[in-house]
Amino acid sequence: MNDLIKKWIPEVKKYWYIPFMLLIGILFMTFRSPEEEVVPAAAGVSDQQYVEETESRVAEMLKSVDGAGECEVTITLASGGKKEYVRQEGSVLVITDKEGNESAVVSRENVPEIAGVTVASKGAGSVAVRNSIIEAVSTVLGIGTNKICVVLMSG
Image 1 (cartoon, rainbow, N blue to C red):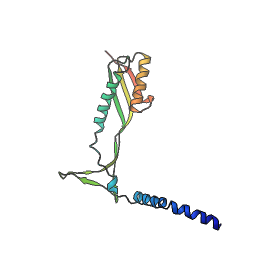
Image 2 (cartoon, one colour):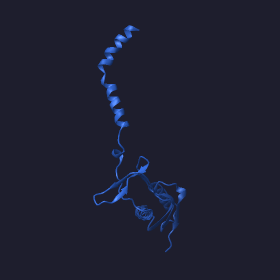
Image 3 (tube, helix red, strand yellow):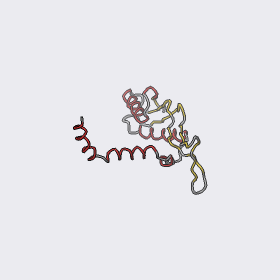
Image 4 (cartoon, rainbow, N blue to C red):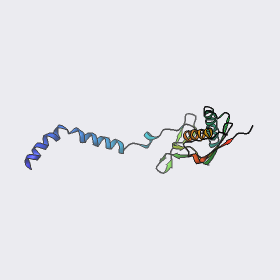
């Protein structure tokens, strides 16, 4: 046993800095101040603006689907977007800009949840085009195909 310890001690002396570096790393992770983690979020958009922008982006994208023709997109929301704020000692952290305007610091902002999408398309009379539209909308918005309705556009 004594021989084992005598062989082990020189190896430990050779790599003495590894436990020291681990300890410093743990201390840095433990004692960070909340201000270091805070990054003010850009001004968010309202749910209505989100819906309008998304509808126009999806309609523009559907123009490239072969056979779809002109499309109109309507999005219905299941819930609005949510913001989570940075808290420090139980209260919301507020920052003040150069003009004296105060705003809460957002830590996370979730986009609204989509309940369903209706697409009116001139090419929706074809089953192949309808399926292409459903797959494209499902992929772009990250929603299930059961939440997408494609109908033939009148006129």
